[in-house]
Length: 77
Image (cartoon, rainbow, N blue to C red; front, side, top):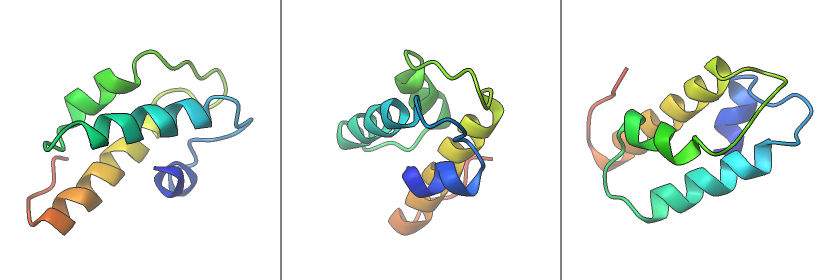
């Protein structure tokens, strides 16, 4: 998640980044499905005032796509 956040420019001040990383890690440890809608719900309690949510959504989608490919699935974009 950290690398996806960096790659998509989803971190500026860095204040919210740990919350997004921990929330996504917790979500992924408790699911076998890499669904974007479910992942975004898992992140819903985190607030970001610097980047907006488009880059965070892209980072999440990127991570899920990578995990799906590794698991032999298809992309969700």
